Amino acid sequence: AQSVTQLGSHVSVSEGALVLLRCNYSSSVPPYLFWYVQYPNQGLQLLLKYTSAATLVKGINGFEAEFKKSETSFHLTKPSAHMSDAAEYFCAVSVKGGADGLTFGKGTHLIIQP
Amino acid sequence: KAGVTQTPRYLIKTRGQQVTLSCSPISGHRSVSWYQQTPGQGLQFLFEYFSETQRNKGNFPGRFSGRQFSNSRSEMNVSTLELGDSALYLCASSFDISDTQYFGPGTRLTVL
Image 1 (cartoon, rainbow over the protein chains, first blue to last red):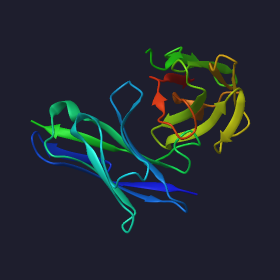
Image 2: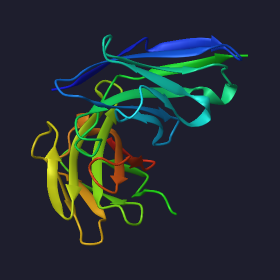
Image 3: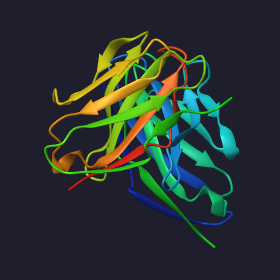
Image 4: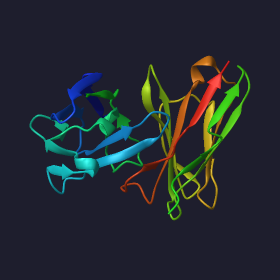
């Protein structure tokens, strides 16, 4: 079985500052890892996906994440926060690529201070 | 290309009733998954269908069921509704099991 832990249910950063959202996973087999974003009253939008092709994954809207096997981590970063980045962010893991059922973390609410 | 659509967007039911939610996947996608999102439990996987067959199932009681039609559209049904079934139900589609899943906007179910 796999699991995901997101450290910090709320993260607050100033506009223009670095965004760092933490995600640690547990999986008995090489995992597929994902970051999704959810805006109020909307579904989930995929930011990026790790499939073992490269440890540094670049996503949409300037986000990227680095897979570190030794630390079982897949932290999400963005060099400069924008007000439009305020949303709920979910890290997720699967065994076969996603449609086998994603296991999500509890989510991190990102707050952007002007 | 049109995204994943879910109907209805909002639904209010009373305890003991049953409900059917509908999901139309992105054109060409054959896999449809369902998730339940609640403040307490977060996002939880319900089940996944591919070519009208349930391939994967999460840990939910038998009151939760689904089906997929030959055009890949999917429905999920919840019978004998309980207050705890109040949630946002999300549908996601992908071409196949290892491909990216795209989520719909969800159906907000309120059970009174």
